[in-house]
Length: 422
Image: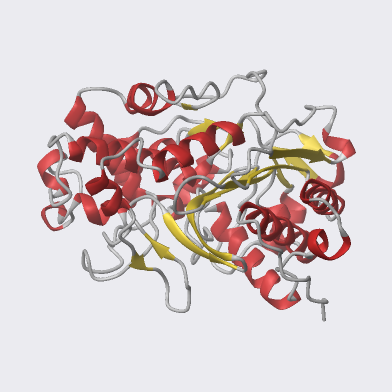
């Protein structure tokens, strides 16, 4: 969940804080982030290039990858590749459901802005108006600050007790109110509205807020306002523990305790490890970790086809009126030196082939990247069934090459050539 402290940018942008920091650092040091531009230089088709890079990603250590690219021409590329050892758990297909992590925030923000358009919520409303007494200083934190991560609230996933539940070491079910309580045990990071800092706490509060304003559960709001109108058959918000055997859910994996320890950033609590059945090559199966610590910050399950339909509908203006879509795409600067900018539940991302819109997400065993162009006509998704497995240098480089190639293919541009590793 957050890319700076224990959690890297999202694990839910947390485990990813752990992992994404390592992944980003690895990509920078290897110089191998840009993908090979073989399609334009050798006559290799886009589908063949992406299939080759997906297989290279798996051969480099990713347990499995799903790729979907639509360049607006009507020909959609769908690819799934997985490691041989993972096939006993599940045969991966491009149509599989996937835990979306912090991509959830884009859907939650869409529901919030729909309520804004209906004059039921205002972006200037203080948190204390809807959730009195829940957040110290809540009179100074507005709905907009929650949406664009300028509230200054501590990221609850970095609380040691929540982290144990997030990684599956603690199996109890957490309520949204308990997650907020864990966050506000810690001092705010800065005065509201003065800076940006990614915090999953913001979206737990937004989930509670829309339930209060609408009188409906967040899970029902996602179905009624987004999934059913768009005919998203694989999309839903998890509200409790997973049930093994859930239909068409891809399996997720993380390194076991011994292999994970060297990948964790300084400051990670001692004993941090993912719970799950042991698998080959030092992995554990994290598929059935209790998702109650995620909810409005990262609890959506979806598929690449469903998410592309959602992104297309959102950016093309089918889910929000023009005024609210404009608000969503109004951005703030992220961390110093980061060229990306954050809107209201959506990110403006600079890639080797151009600027795109979307989000990424990480929950135990699942990393997802979903992008679209400014019109919603072109979409790209890359889903990988691990977070910390991507912190290994060779795997990080191969995965980033695949992501870059997918985005460039989406924009119908040749990806820059892969730079040699030093």
